[in-house]
Figure 1 (tube, rainbow, N blue to C red):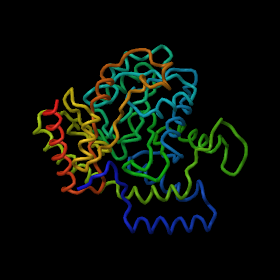
Figure 2: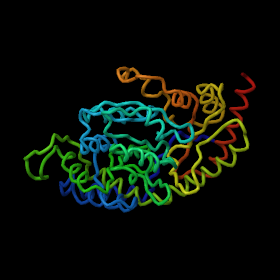
Figure 3: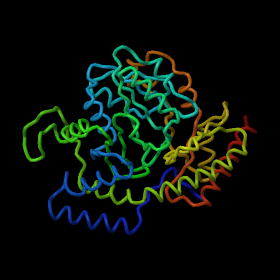
Figure 4: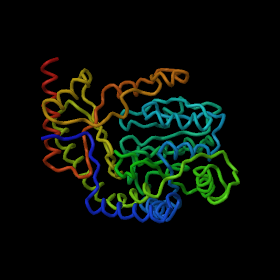
Length: 376
């Protein structure tokens, strides 16, 4: 059996609906910021119980727009070091300085304590990344820490479509949340992003920033230094159709994760991220930490070549403070992130995964770990 690292799920009916809509869009010539964008925004906001949603060209754009709307230029912004480079790039392009912070090995996310070690008198925002779709259970503590110091909490929710903690959805814990619709995400539009917020000022500013900073779509009076961050109508209809399946996708992923949990907990040689009882993780990634000493490269090779299982990409394989592009901002060692980035793996998990595939993955994983342990 072959199990790929990722699988993008569009039913024949979905493909036909998107193709029909694309034909209509091309016939009318209404290619951007039209009715499909508005419908996608409304549906995504409703799915996350948010007052406002703004569709943009990417998750990176969504994060940069939020930071610009909050006015971080010339300030420091704390980001976790184990995140995709786009998180820090968005900070830099918003005119701010990224300050890298360590994370918890339990959640792969920032904590109030790790942020406290990174804040400066110039800190204006903290970007909390929901790694693998898990909203950290201590998010309220981090929010209180930020509120006490007049620092904005921003959510990089690129991984977290549909995730919740308690009664709160991803995107509701800070001033705004940035989502990505890159092809591998739980919900995709091919390319694209979304801003969720309950702040009318951020909502209005985001709508201006995404369209070259213009005061209105049909005019050419510019009131902000915006950019071409619009989402096309074809991307919007693709995302809107895919979004209809969010509940089913979450249920399938949760069932696979439960199967993984039961099997892996018997091994005794790995730990996994724990979802609290009052949390709902979308399992964009299923993250496992093998015991120290297991060679990740050999493990991935063994799984792929001997068992036909391709592991999903790490989150992430190298912390940002150790990457050359961020050399000027690497001020100190961040040991927890350095350890988990070097050791963890992500088992494949798909929105249409079968029980047979899930069982094959965990059996193969156990066999590969045993083989490496015997060799080493």
